[in-house]
Amino acid sequence: MLTLNPSCPSSTVTFSQSRHQHPINASSSLLNPNLLNRIQIQRTLHTSSPLLHKPTSPKLEASTKVSSFTRIYGHPIGISSKPIYQVQDWGSKISQLNKTCGFPSGFSSKPRSQIPKAASEANPERGESEAAVSKPKATTAQLALIFGLWYFQNIVFNIYNKKILNIFPFPWLLASFQLFAGSVWMLVLWSLKLQPSPQISKPFIVALLGPALFHTIGHISACVSFSKVAVSFTHVIKSSEPVFSVVFSSFLGDSYPLQVWLSILPIVLGCSLAAITEVSFNFQGLWGALISNVGFVLRNIYSKRSLQNFKEVDGLNLYGWITILSLLYLFPVAIFVEGSQWVQGYHRAIATVGKPSTFYIWVLLSGVFYHLYNQSSYQALDEISPLTFSVGNTMKRVVVIVSTVLVFRNPVRPLNALGSALAIFGTFLYSQATATKKQKGGEKKN
Image 1 (cartoon, helix red, strand yellow):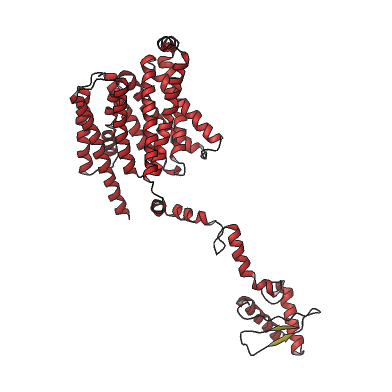
Image 2 (cartoon, rainbow, N blue to C red):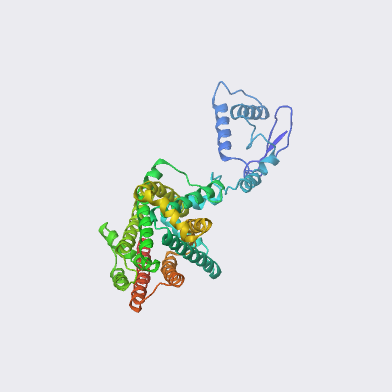
């Protein structure tokens, strides 16, 4: 016997169903309204159709309707062909399925961790703001470790880079080896799964050709400058990079407030004063540092324009592929420019140092630490705000200049020190002014 209690609690309808008899109390909350409507339609069809309607007893008629409904819809009355206790546990099984598969309620095809990501992809500005809010701030100890590694690696690179160039004055070969060391380092990280490798496509490589070319120009020009003048003087001139950034960006349509233009004045004055009073002044060294600034500024500008569709590639992977492409650009030109002098220069360098192992260690340290300090700069930018990064980058030049002056004992005149300080102070003012500009731009967007 099958007992059905519809929405009205007082009315009970008893049906007879084949040989098996199961007493079932189905409340209206468990019955699907669509199924009830279909039963009602089926009942109407049986009642109205002269072919299907046969005068029978109520029990037989109801049994015929249920049996007909079963044949049409594939399951007996209720929600499924399973016993009623399974129907009651259906909701708990859905909840258990959600917990097991990581889905939220509603059978979303994406796990919970991907839902905020999908929202940020649909609305990039909102995604960036949410990421900024949810991103934990670095503690004082973490900041000290980040800046400590960054500064230490930069100091080691500059010291051993200059030591090599003093005894082996071939910046094209040394710059090529530094790019080679960085390329090998990234390939090792990718092969050992220590760094997730990016998805490489032909459009991505094409988009990187321009930034890699300007990176090559900036790197080799800096190496040429290091080989001609003191490290401190090169870094003072390289602190004028914001001047080129503002000028080139303005030509391309960007606008800057008055405080940004005013901040570059002490940079120009300080660099000019430092150049005039520099003991080791050399035009090749000066032009090398200036061209390096132009190369790196154009690299940054071109990267923003050509890599808009590849924002999923993080900074470290982007720098890794730029390094690989720069090596392919630079090494063939290096062979053409100074390749015929490398063998003689090598023998002179070994004779000066005394031990070949010392020469090899210096070259290796310059290559490894060149990549490491750039890698640390990208990792620092991921952990701290752009303003803090700009201030840290300004202070990095101060630390490098002081360290190299102490190591190589370069003579520094008072006016030269004043010019260097004025240029670095202008760089600090520029970072503050551009950060204020970005904040105002973000408020207008919001």
